[in-house]
Length: 318
Ligand code: DAH
Image (cartoon, rainbow, N blue to C red; front, side):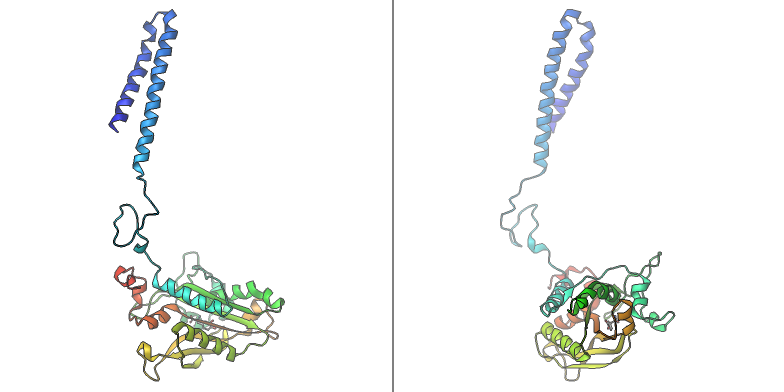
């Protein structure tokens, strides 16, 4: 740095010397200028060299192939052990992999949607009180951070309608982040994750749906499970069910300890119709449930708020 300052001072002096040309006899001016130019160019070259050296020094070369881990202190190198997937993201991957193994496509949900996809396309009648059941947020422009992944049903049906035309079924799951205007406590978060499932074919039945759901939960919890359903209500399914599993002993459950895992049902004919699918020819079923709840049961977690709190002590346990 000092070297560079000195060179720049020298350059200033040389530039000042050019003013002296007026005192030089005319016949010697050419020679005078030539010598000065030479000096100036030499200094400029040295300045460029010094600047380059300075830049190189600022980026200390590191050996990216050097081994690094929690016990090896390599300055400027972040160990790959410093970060990891968020437990919800890791579990979401597991969830979608299980569905993929079962033959489902995966489509991601979005984080801003509209009135049509949130309500109208799902057969919520205008002014129907069921709309109030989803206490959502709204942007000033009237857009909606989705309160459930069902907002994707209409899009998925339209996007995959060609499957039906080609004689194939529609089988898609939609993981996504959802938002509700909740009072936050140990079991309620304003931001959480859901996974939606949509299946349409000529012959599918409620029995197929229960088979798929049982298969999924048994794969996820890696054991046989007792399941149960009870009637539910959703405008977009008819009939609608709540799907429950008996909390496994290995996860601290007692006999008869049933937990509601998701909502499901046969897709309402109006929902199929709105997506251009003839409900007299095709049937479908759909389901949607929280990922956070699934993961909490798997790991025996008690407080859902940990997922969004950015608490490193919690995150490092995974
Ligand atoms: N979207 C519903 C909720 O968040 C859950 C649900 C119920 C999804 C029935 C479905 C369904 O696809 O068919 O409360």
